[in-house]
Length: 367
Image (tube, rainbow, N blue to C red; front, side, top):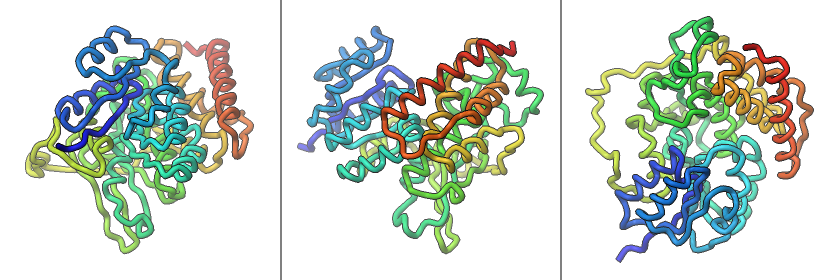
């Protein structure tokens, strides 16, 4: 009888977590769930616990250490959003547990520390984001790769004017044409900040200089990303725009199985694939992310915190969509970067930047 892979999910009640459980239900003979951890949705967590029967469940931050100290885990899916994912990820790595990583903040805030720890403890970090998952699948010999190419759908405002973006409603910003995601990341997709954060993640995951990471807009979201080898050959990963596929790849790696979204891919049905350069004048967030990544240190933690608080303010109707960038840039420009920060310093910067951003929005509320 095949040995089941033992897995815990941090963030089981969120978008990635619920889809991961759908994947596991399809492959229930392959997995044993050790623990499920949810945020505030106690009712859903209870339903998940009754259905999947983990050893234990955790609600909120308390108890995450127990999950990450449980060496019975073969892999932990970090599917929560926000800075809450960073410390549990580091704890699991220290305990030699492999990570399926869907939490952007972990690498954006502390990529150098996380990747160094993973190397020290011999832990695999398998990316769940469709773009990084695609790159992971394409790379055979990383020493032969010349460039990473990250695709972007362009979001709901790809063919809108700057003026239309400036006057966009929350409903319009959340109307993503391809992907079903949480509210915060959907707004990041509308401003293309999500692509900026993914560039920073890719730098840490694969060790490439920022000048060797390109972005191309691909509205159909069929090509999830690509790599260019030194000889000019380009290898791309294609698939339907469904998070079930990269989730399954990350938690079953290096094996592949028929899954919930598996079906024959038809080039004829897809018919066409379009690509274009990003409009950095309309989407300046990407340039800001490149700048933060190249500066390094706490610059990326600052970028992440300021942007997140601005996104929350937009979702609450306190600011306009385009002011997310303007506020983030102002806070970022004023930040005094700490190079080679400790984890404690990173969290302190995160706290101060969030407080400063909230106060700025409250004091100079443009709406």
